[in-house]
Image 1 (cartoon, rainbow, N blue to C red):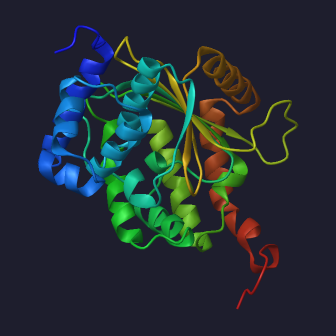
Image 2: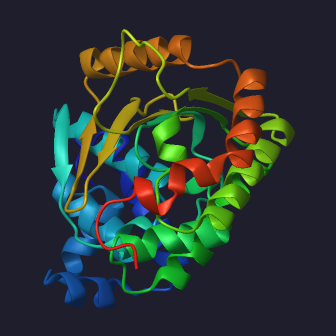
Image 3: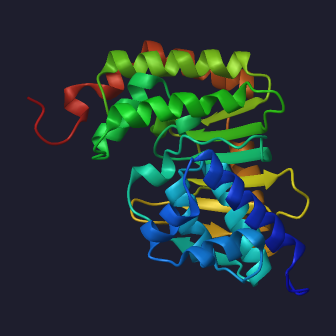
Length: 293
């Protein structure tokens, strides 16, 4: 093996091999699917060749890994190759709804802001299905099942600290009728009270805020000391990742500012329960655009 293979590259390669084996895929199948040679797959897994963020993203999409595992390995790859920001274009929901979880929790802290829709880790089955259907997914039920399975990470041993700031408008996204939205709000309040490692805060409707973000973002801090923190922004056609120290510092500052605007955890639970009682007022046909028949 070449002496210039970095420790990071060796670690990534070993992890890619483990994930391939978990997916029960042969190296030959992977090579054939991606249009590569089988030796290329072997060299990547052994750290015998340099590989790119694009190479790793293709492998992770094929293996169906979860968002935090994807972010950790892409961030580590970017650090090894000297990239501070990158875009992963790999269309559709399958790449985001992986069924393979890491053998260990890879994250120690997740900071998540959503101004539009509830995070998948906090959705009920019915709400997840409604969101997926509204987004045009081909298999809303499959997506909902995958999200429910993924939520096990929040109660598993060694679960990461999950800090969430929600804009109240995300709570009222009209993807379903008032009864379903109410059930989601109540379930969210119950979860915020019961999950020890969840810090959930809500920015109320109409609050005067000196800070805002036009898009949702997630910042992952990883257990592996050699893995840089990664900020992730999801879009319908591709995902943007940042790992440069100055970018992470900016997102961390923005998240802290949004937390200061939001209600504290106890106040957020009260707000959720109050909103659930009054949800029809916000989701009435008169407040919706388009054809209401």
